[in-house]
Length: 324
Image (cartoon, rainbow, N blue to C red):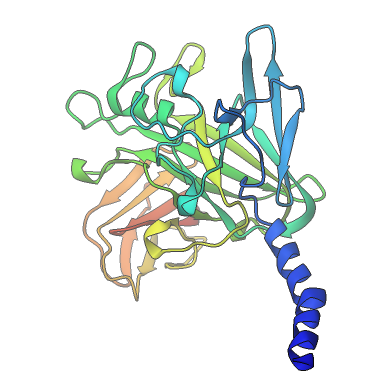
């Protein structure tokens, strides 16, 4: 009995505090309290909130009862269209069936500040219901993605920038919340479930900046509602089916390249499509035919950075390439 008591004491002194500290590095938003409205939008002038080791800034305008930056919510409405449903995740629940999650409304670049510089593992991302339904159906301000015939090459993209201690950009990840550029319209998608985005390629960062862009734009900027949802920042992926971005599963060589690149997809059994986009998201190469060590001719491209993507059954694997 004394031995068991001693082991329990050691566990309480050494193991449990370390476990608790490791848990605080993950922004789950579960520790944040919500009233009966089901959301917090900054109307208390707090200027933001902290979850895990990250601070999420918020700006609230009392004149217009509007906000920008980050809020958090536990709402589950996936069917009501329009601005009044701006606090719901299209997945209908938090990641890993949790209650709370973060809602972002970006008016330009919105930044998450970390308490210390660190390599962030990634985050779960999904669409906001307001944005998703406006892309799916269109409304008085936005177009229906794909157009009336489904062939319009529309996309809605979240760009994620890593910023280090010296305020330099370490790297950028692009996550498509909707993509209608596929030759087969059945492959077009609007993200509905929580999908894991790997942030490790950003390296050691102090800030993470989020920026939304779309093919649907007007005289006053982007028409697509500038919302997305985030959960479990710096957490872990729980299922391979949750993956949508992975920079390490494909070998592309040479990189930088001059005229063509070889693509090695050993170990990937369900590759369906390969495509290349420029940094603005414009599709510059597309093929439904791929093999291991497949060589593709990109000699017509101008110098610069491009994203080469492989679509499989459950994820999109993206690699940055450079044309010399």
